[in-house]
Image 1 (cartoon, one colour):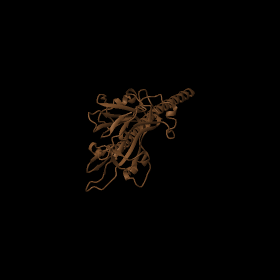
Image 2 (cartoon, rainbow, N blue to C red):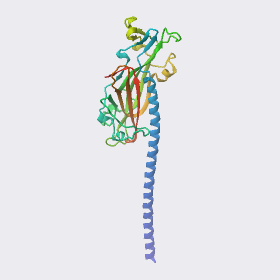
Image 3 (cartoon, rainbow, N blue to C red):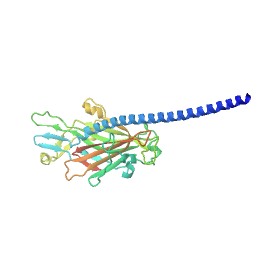
Image 4 (spheres, helix red, strand yellow):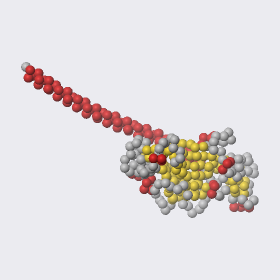
Length: 316
């Protein structure tokens, strides 16, 4: 009788251990499924949010890139343009090489897929510059010590002038002074990706646009009336004349962008390129932006935009 009870007790213990093992296995599988589902949800949410954010950033930049022309004041005698270096587009020195700019995941993105695009290079037709963090992993602690307090590490990308033409002396047009803005695109606030793998992005930055506006000066011909023959003028605005904070004299679109504005977060690489053309009337400038998920270095999206500008492009 006692032997039978002992066997029954031992058999019950085996059942318990077996049940515990099954429950542990099921719990582990459920945890993995939950983790995978959470990661998938976070990835989709990040993609949706980042796509919208970068699209808005492109719209804001495009508005002022479309106005990237020489400041001009149309008169009955012709069009005056300030052709000095003060009214040109400046692309700064790159801080990345091509080999450091893109991860393997970015290069494998399928063309026309939402939030992605191929990485094509035609160095014979265009000049490329690469900015940001890329796949480099040797940044110093000062480069990303505190994302929100660290303001001394900035990467200048490009700057340009946008102008809305003024009119003077033309019947049917009110005399209006040109409205010109200076814009600087730059990266700041480097932060580290939490889960990065080899050949993926390990850091990212915030993309900012700094703008100021001059609305009180005219363009005058260089050398008197002879300047109209060559269309050469000199714009009267000096650095002190540009408004860099909100003011009642600014229009709504200027009020929305004056000062420093955050355009996009989680930017790993920005590529600026401009096509070489046989004339100085216009050129095509392109901007590629790659964003990386802050939690996973393998999650990336890529957005691009182009604009035709009549400013001279001056690579630094």
